[in-house]
Amino acid sequence: QYLCMQNKHYNLQLCPLTGSDIPAQVESLPDPCPRKSEVGDFMRYHYNGSLLDGTLFDSSYSRNSTYDTYIGKGYVIAGMDQGLLGVCVGERRRIVIPPHLAYGEEGTGTKIPGSAVLVFDVHIIDFHNPSDTVEITSVKPEKCGKIAKRGDFVKYHYNATLMDGTFIGSTCVAIIHLCIVLFWQASNLKGTYDAAKITLFCVFGVMQCVYAV
Image (tube, rainbow, N blue to C red; front, top):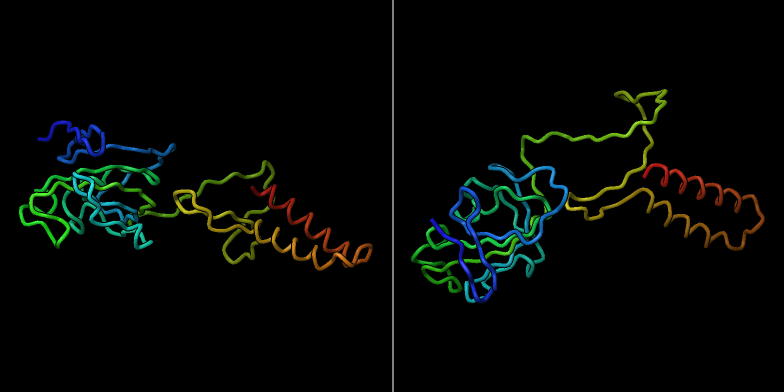
């Protein structure tokens, strides 16, 4: 069993996670955290991997690509399988992995020597479980005269993000961009019927977006 350990290179005191051999420190914890990772989740995360003396041996950032894997299933070294359990989307965590849960006495490659303790700084981008279903949170108007059913043609606005809040897209942004172009093209149509149509379209569209948000 590992006790809390102090490392001069990182100036951190690292203590084992509950029920784990892995010393870890949570550096940033999002609020709220609706769900924590469990065995069998598919996770995307960024990491910097280094030795205890601070020597960097690998980084997902250098490849501009997350590391994607199932956790708790043996697809990564045992220490990472343990250290990635119980995290939140958006969490930043430092995980210190002893040799017997990493690459043992042999090490691996040219950058990780035998009996090396590994330090991983991870940023959890998102995760899901294959058994997950669609989660819906709705805000309905007080008067709902018509409810959509299968086969209906529906018009709607949306704002889309990743689980960590990263913006993907929005119908509102598209309308605003379109209106900027239309107003620029209609700058010489002042007072005409076409100019009035463009103005009404844009004002109505933006108002719908604001209401939808």
